[in-house]
Image 1 (cartoon, rainbow, N blue to C red):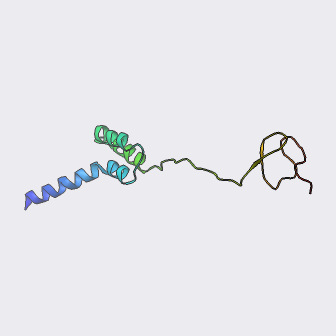
Image 2 (cartoon, helix red, strand yellow):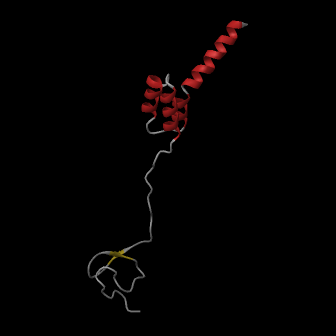
Image 3 (cartoon, rainbow, N blue to C red):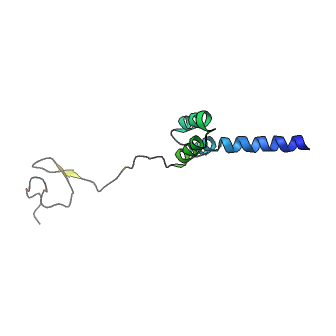
Length: 98
């Protein structure tokens, strides 16, 4: 019975020790291998373990693509302008009468 408790405690301690790596893998963090290396090498220090866990929990920045309204080239300066524009904001030429 005592052996079973020791085995369960060792498994729980291992899971807690590798928690930053597990979190990084589950979140598909782009730096998961570096987080795992930090966890293995410095996880035995409390500061290294907390640092790896915070790093694993940080949001990975993904590029944001901003899609705006369609644009057409100005017939005078070739800068991109809105189709509904009557005056080009770049060259100040009258594009449409209206």
